[in-house]
Image 1 (cartoon, rainbow, N blue to C red):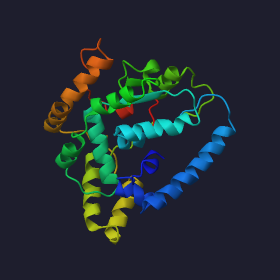
Image 2: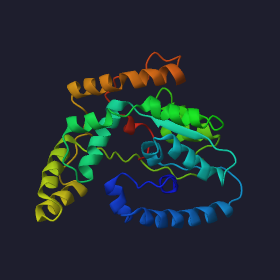
Image 3: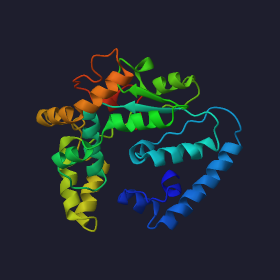
Length: 265
């Protein structure tokens, strides 16, 4: 909605293909259809708590005009709005991003991906939302067991919203991160191309777990050190502004953040 109202195409080519969007007119039709259904949904429920979760809102809307446009859209339906972001240890996040990139069909080098994601200044992203929408406020939470109410993501989210998990369906943790040997298998498959029979067979092997599992991929130590160094300045500014009582935001954990109790993808 925000990108369309601002006259911009979704920058992610893979996402555009999945949505069947080629031109801004295509995107506008898609957005208009969504807005019609969204408006009807809200009108049928004139009061209560509405929770809208979407990682692309944070990832794609990184310019002041886009952030204001999204909030303007929400303001048409909700007089009171609050924004919440959960921060994950960059080391865990980069490892997860690498798994997702390989799963989506890319054959990307780990160092290349690290260089790409490290260009993003997380403090600048958060501060932009916070500074542009002071009437809403930006709540920042950490995906760290010692900061999560009840030790889990869903219980913490409910706590922040002032509700609880009663009556809600809670999915079991789906550990979607690839194991190291799965990454090697899929990178080889991706080089074959999607029209190759071998690619389909190897993807099926991954899908049905014939390849086995030995724990999710973790960054080698030299890559962990590189990621921490790249994000150090941004993370420190976040700590100073939002968590002044913590000496550090993230510890050097052996368990990835996505294995936290009751966390869901």
